[in-house]
Length: 180
Image 1 (cartoon, helix red, strand yellow):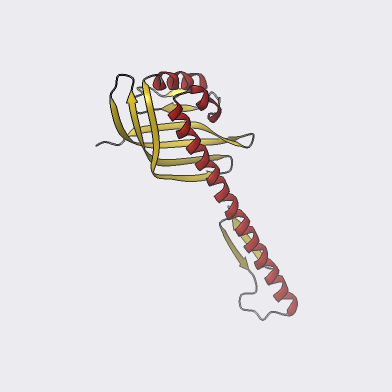
Image 2 (cartoon, rainbow, N blue to C red):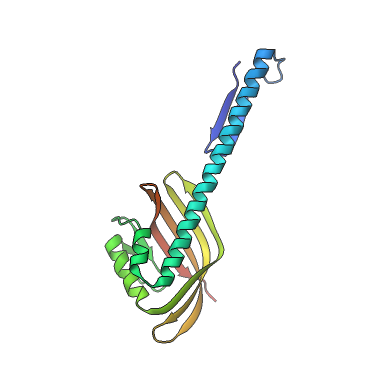
């Protein structure tokens, strides 16, 4: 019987075959080769997942940094400019759908602040599945409105990313305040 290696999503590997049967030299070499193959696939698959999660974390950090500039031109390259992109911020009354609506919402939102600093306080908890990834985390938004009002706003955020031409872009951002 030939050993069979099962790998799912690069996270688990098993070898089936021989179930306690006495193995000859040829069978023993086959089993060793199958085990080595499974270990290599498992290691490479796991590394790829960590690399993708690191890429998503970098995209989240870039998003938070861009928010702090209060400049829409810094946010634009981080978003997918698609009709199905979505955004809702804590102060929004409606969901912005499509890049044009998202851009208008960000311009209006950023125009109300004189200062904004977003700091991750929990997470982000990231999952990658092919060319789509999502994350959830808690951030603190230290803000100062142009009116002079200042606040620290703990916020839950959920982000969805799609990979476009090798780059992870935001396709959805939903943020809501954590009740005090």
